[in-house]
Length: 262
Ligand SMILES: Nc1ncnc2c1ncn2[C@@H]1O[C@H](COP(=O)(O)OP(=O)(O)O)[C@@H](O)[C@H]1O
Ligand SMILES: [Mg+2]
Image (cartoon, rainbow, N blue to C red; front, side):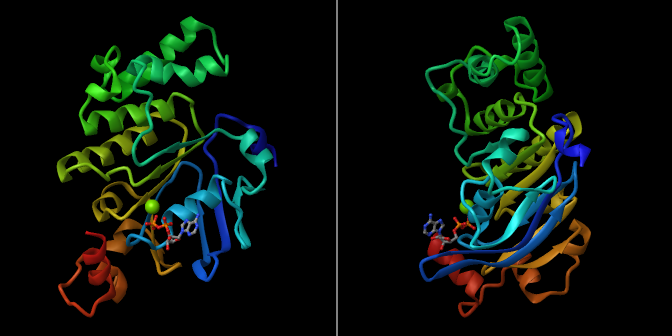
């Protein structure tokens, strides 16, 4: 496969019958899905359903007990696969360096990897700041920014690496609903401006409604739904409807879960 060698094209991701347990806790129970190059796949599910565990199998931080993840056909559990491709992960909290300006936070990866001369690095960082409309933060320090702005900077730092695959873990957490809507726009901007495949992991149903090409719903370790966002919002499946419109029924496991995690 020649596509394997190209480092500027969006990647294809396939999960095949993934199983993962920790002791007696069978977290992933045979999860399969496919994300095509350039698509935005939003993987939803209640808290504790195994979303972050699934991400760890994709980035190769852990290997599944059974089944595999393939990235452009190569096994994600092999470190060599990750050396071939550029993958970026946007963490829940952003993980920015507070001792450095926003500009230097963005330039750090490119400088450390000596990928370009300093002039090119500065141009690339400026371009990303522009794309995400955060030029005014360049000289500021992360701690002085609002939560929404920090989120933008965290995304900017990921895309400056020119990734072929970007993974977002709960990108709207810690943000109020209005900010959460701008995260959808942010992910859409990244998709439109870069050559990237996006996998967004979230319990925030508004994200799926806004930007997803495809939506997966993880429920107790199984992918109980996989389809377009139109199919998702019009699904007749009780669990999908319940996820989208939780009813206040104390015997409903979803409701119990929300109460417990609140
Ligand atoms: N490293 C680990 N060791 C043991 N249990 C884990 C580990 N990582 C996750 N789990 C368990 O896997 C389940 C799913 O967790 P997680 O994927 O973080 O859920 P979420 O869907 O909220 O991201 C939870 O029961 C969690 O306790
Ligand atoms: Mg999680």
